Amino acid sequence: MLTQEELIAKKMARINEVHRFVRGRTALLVIDMQRSFMDPEASLGVAQAWDIVPNIKKLLNFCRENEVLVIYTAFIARPEIPCLRVDPFGPEHRVHDPGQPTGWGLPSSNSVLGTTGPEDPAIIDELKPLPTELVVEGYTLDKFYGTPLDLALRSQDIRYLIFTGSMTDLCLGSTLFSAASRDYRVTAVKDATATIWPEIQECMFDIFTRKLARVINTDETLKELQEIYS
Image (cartoon, rainbow, N blue to C red):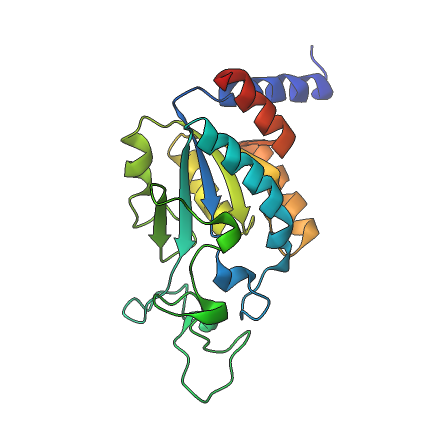
């Protein structure tokens, strides 16, 4: 009878086997790397997201050079859609009244469509999408919900997803859960995802590995991509 350690090793080997990328059926997702979540003056800035920019760039460069599909997502808010993500859970996404203070916990027009400055929902310049790359805009944490993301992937016969971006426990995590529920083979790149709290980051990786996805680093991801695209 196998020991617990042997059973875990067997499971991990099977996860790696099932999730190994397939040429022409793999896509890179860049989740919510937006100015409204990364500008130091934004009401909901995630400073840790800057740490993963170099690794996302490495993956972007490879994918673009080898015609691997790249899709971005972006969270946006609109006053015409007063969903729970805005009220009560995201007051920062409510439209700012001129002359009133802004910041965490206050109406700041964060990610509101058409906003400029620190709360602008555009993808950061450092990871700017190419004109041919789709940016899926969503109004909830889960970027499959109410968006064409699933159609965009399935219409191009994509089955294997590489997850990068922010935040691991919110938008990225919710979208990853949704992808796994749709039976996509998901790989989360642990040093190309970010959240504010290191302990929650590790907890999310543990949850992903147990039930949802393969978790590997950027070098491992690039090595596997190079093997199948060489």
